[in-house]
Amino acid sequence: MRVHKRTSLEEARVAETLKKGSRVTGAAREKLAADLKKKYDSGASIRALAEETGRSYGFVHRMLSESGVTLRGRGGATRGKKAVTA
Image 1 (cartoon, rainbow, N blue to C red):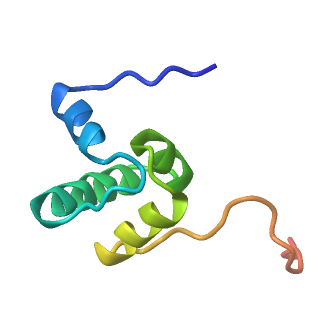
Image 2: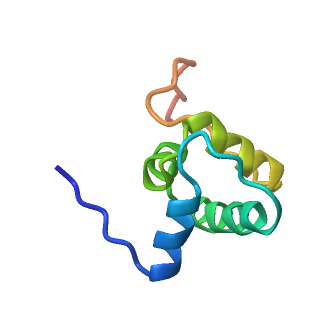
């Protein structure tokens, strides 16, 4: 079991106002989008961000897309031809 520790009171307050299913508009939406963008650009996955914020994968994906983030490709093995090494 992993326990996430909030880094600040502000993040706890933001999470409180972002309960799953609630609308996020105006300044709160802009702040959330900026925070998600910063964390995603630092290497966090969409799934990790969704779990951290209590929102869905789709919500986080949409927020990142609206923020103009270039989304990373999927990880894992690729199914293409292997590169030939000389």
